[in-house]
Image 1: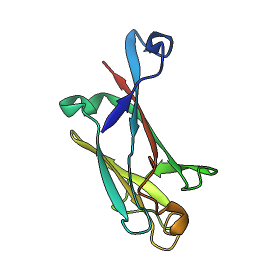
Image 2: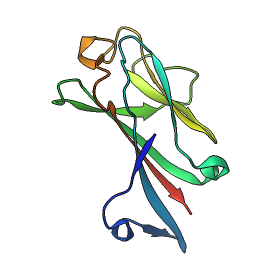
Image 3: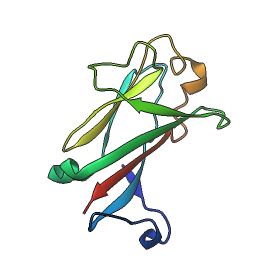
Amino acid sequence: MRILFPPNIANYIKEVNGAFMYPMIIEIGAWDMQAHGTITIAHGLGANFRKIRQLSVIIRADNDNVYRNLELNNASGAGTYSAGSITYFDSLFVALQRATGLTFDNVGYSSEAINRGWILIWFFQ
């Protein structure tokens, strides 16, 4: 797990009703989406995962020319009309899934030599 923080993080902290939200960026790392339909990525927040208020994921293609969002899906798997989804997050992991036979299930998302994308988490400290 590689956690990145924006440069000059103080400029990105948001005040919401007197509390402060912080950004955390996590690299997904290697993920051959064609061969493996799911992946879990450690976030390091532990029990503080309950303080997560926003979570988004960007997936990039092997050629680094296409970037796509994954949507949050409260169902038990990737949605019928979604190429992939954020299936859950808990005290240890953010879980991602791609749908079989759709956008990410092809050779254009099969390299394990690149970072597949990023997870952006906003949480209260």
